[in-house]
Length: 152
Image (cartoon, rainbow, N blue to C red; front, side):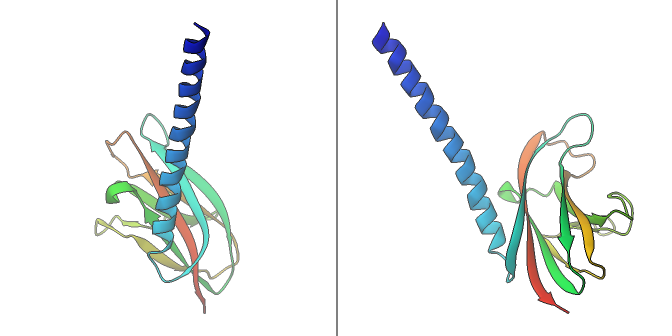
């Protein structure tokens, strides 16, 4: 009986460790592949797991950007899912009001893999990754990448 219990504990511990390693590996590979798609200097990544339910879904981060610098914001999702949007905004212009910069253009309905932002004023900005409005998908993950392109 002791051998069965010990065997069960070993199998359980091993499977738990392997599954955690596989999930971490997936995220790291996605960050790496997303960061190397553009000709720019990687600065930071934004990992999120999205779950669609009642209320606001997604994650928001704060970043400090410097005046006269050109930054590139990239968004990568598994299998190129087009129901996720990365948005950049500041404290004077909340997330869902203009002007903001996003990987989704509501007017044309086009999704972008990345966009460039020329910072006109040093300060704190906010990056959010969320499902688009009226998305029916239940869950996914996404990676946003902030990279430096040049100074103006």
